[in-house]
Image (cartoon, one colour):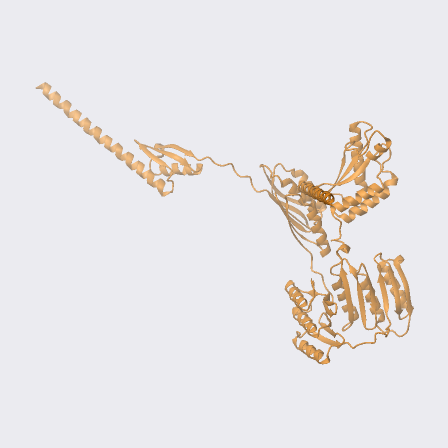
Length: 632
């Protein structure tokens, strides 16, 4: 009985244990499911679908690859907001991150009357001390504001050459902004004249290194034109401007369109300041149109005064009709004078004054003047303008000249002074000036001057031809031409030195003067002054002597006020002999100075290609010639 009772108690406890175990297992499963679902929902809600969630008892494991370390930490935080953070097991990984890209190196230099400032990010490898010292040498006492930052990343391949080019360019830009990138340099600058603008653009394009994209935005102030003048004529030879002025680019295009419609070939018009009214283009185009209807003559507009001169032979009725239409078309501010020229006796010889300017700069004065005072005045004026030793006077005094003769003669001489060569003829009825010039704006300048000094309604004719080779800017020699000119000078007069020293012999100073003259005309060049010796003496001693002699030549050029910032003096010792060192004559030839352009890799490649093409063409021509000879 007692055994039965004990068995009953045991079975009861066993049953209770089983029930408790089942209940505990169910509770754990419930907790695992609720934790896993809760964490999963929270992660999904925040877009972290990449994370895997697995509950194991009270612990919740997170696995998967997080995009970044920050996202991984956010996943842990999110899971910790659903279950106790101590229960969260981190089995997550982080995706491999690419190496940080190097920053874009750039710098911006601003220079004006107040000094120079520079801002930007440059590589640590750039010699910052050298860069700032260059800026200080450019700005002088005005100071440099240094806002440069550095970053320790590899410099792009072309960064240093772009920076060096910008430093060289800034020295010739007193008012400018230069933006530097590895493969691009952008320059915005202001110059005082159009000629200075053209010269600066040409020099900068010569200097730019290979693989650097140069962007130029250089402006020059618009000229002040006084009086504001346009003169257009139609002759049997064709239609053309003696002078053309406009106040805006749009006005210029309207005027040029009217001129082209009248038959002018490739006309040009200066945009300047000083226009008397915004309706200037209306008056000019209407005047050109009127002259076109007449078929010949000239129209001169000086400020608000318009003078229309019809060609001889124009019908009076046509003249009256066209003039009447023009008077009613012109803006109110303009006043019109009209004249119909009559046929004149070709044998009549009116009094005249003539001055001619030769290409060599010599001036001859001929013709009639009012009195001795005017003869002396014209001679003095010409000597002051052209040089006292270049003027020959052959004028004579007569009594029957107009009262304004002196004004007309002096105005004609002033116009002649704008030309490279030419002549001026003054008569009581007109002033005629012809010649050649290297200034594309000379015609407008002369016509404006004559219109202002001769007075309202005065007749004059300006026939000036622009020639590129006379232009002081466009006529500059190329670097290759400069190198060849210097080579010819050195060949004609060798640069000798005192024996065993770097002192230039007095006999070579004339040669140095000639070289300096050429270099001043050539502008900025990347030039290497090369020194060579003969083979006598030690190699190191010869190398040092050749270096000293090259530097002496460089210093002589500096003493002659040649800009040598882009020059380099290099001694090569006894390298590259041009003659046999075994003879005295050969050694003398090997002791020499040479001037050589420093070419970029791209320029050298172009030269080699050109030589190869020339050689191929020569071979082809030779083959063809041989074949033709055989055929014959």
